[in-house]
Length: 137
Image 1 (cartoon, rainbow, N blue to C red):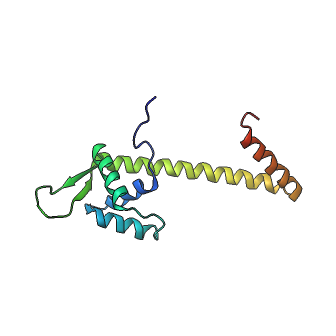
Image 2 (tube, rainbow, N blue to C red):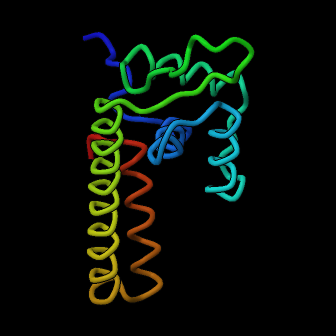
Image 3 (cartoon, rainbow, N blue to C red):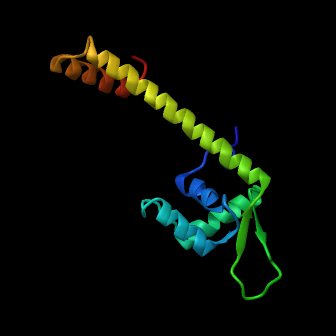
């Protein structure tokens, strides 16, 4: 089965769309917004930025606007399809976070009862490591 492009987004992809969510921007502004929004945890260089912008254009998530003005910065705006893709990715990430919270809650309950001793936690950890090494267990 061929891989579908843009089914789930990387962090830079999500943040680029997030930067465009409130209106059209040029590439430099997008990169600055991403850097500021993430406290420089996510930085996007020009090669990555324009590669991703090209993919988003190909997928009709964004469109370049004001193409006829020579000597100006390239400015991009989100399309309706891009807004939907952004919203779908947010929902996907929220579902992932919900699942992770449920697992953590279940572990806390287990550790509070039958796995409360240090010896039991060490044994459980050893079993989990073995399970990851041998998924058929």
